[in-house]
Image (cartoon, rainbow, N blue to C red):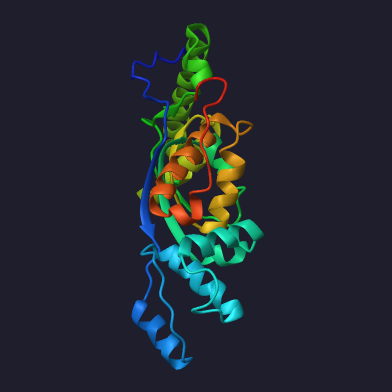
Length: 255
C-alpha cells in the first residue's frame, strides 16, 4: 500500500463553548387562580419568573401556607434553599443548547443523570469536516499545539479513509442512507475526544444548582467549568431568586 496523500484541509479549531437558553417554564395563572378559589385561599406573589412561582406554589402546598409566613418570593425561595428543601425547585425547568463543546465534555456532562439530553449523532452526521475543541493549556503552548494538531489531523484522515473503505465494503447494501450510516458508525471509532459536538439539555432548578456547584468549582475540568459559568450567568438573569446566592470569583489562573 502506498503512502496516504497529505491532508490539505484547514483544521477548524474551537476554544470556547456557546450556551443558548432556548426554553423556560410557563405557568397557567388562570388554573392556579381556580385552585385557590376552590380551596377558599388567597395568595399573590411578586415574581413573574415561572420557575420561581412554581417553586413557591409547590412549597406552600406542602403546608397549605398560602397568605401566611414569608411574603416575597425571594424570602420564600431563599428559605427553601437555606433549609435544603430542594425538591420544590425541581418543578421549574430550563432547556439549553450547547455548541462548540467536545465529546470529552459530553462524556462528563451525561454523568448528571437528572438532565435530559439530545446529542448530535455521529452515525448520521458526516464528521469529515468537523470542528475540534482545543484545550487552552495546549493552545497557549506552540510546541504542544503542534503535537495536538498533528494528532487530530491524523485521526480525521484515518476517519475519511475508513469511511471510503467501508462504503466500498458495503456496496451490497442497497439503501444509500443505511450504507453511509454503517460506514460512519464504524469509522467514528478513531475520532478523538476533541471532536466538536452539539447537545440539547433540559434540567430542573435543583439539578442545575447541583451541576453549577460541582462543575463551577475550581476543581472541575476547565471546559465544563466554562459551560457551568456561562449557564450560571444566564440563570442569574433569568431567575435571581433561585440562582442569585452564588458568587463568581476569578481563579488563580485568571479564568
